[in-house]
Image (tube, rainbow, N blue to C red):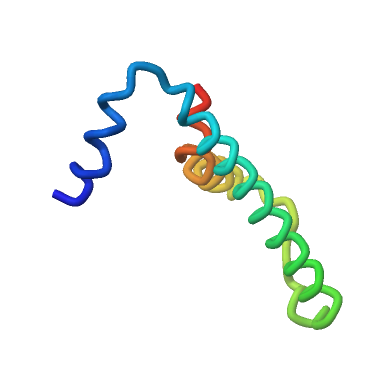
Length: 83
């Protein structure tokens, strides 16, 4: 019922022009989140390098898992609303 309350006004829209601002905010949030994750990871790598000694950077057997996670992460409102 709660989701119906949220979705019903969206279904009444004749154009999605007004939702472009929401999509822009979603894209900016995704980029901000990725930057924060990269900064935090780099900080941890510099502070405690011993934890990262056994990291294998490229392993071909994990490549399908990587693409699966990447597609899952980027298939949200930030991408769909722009289409």
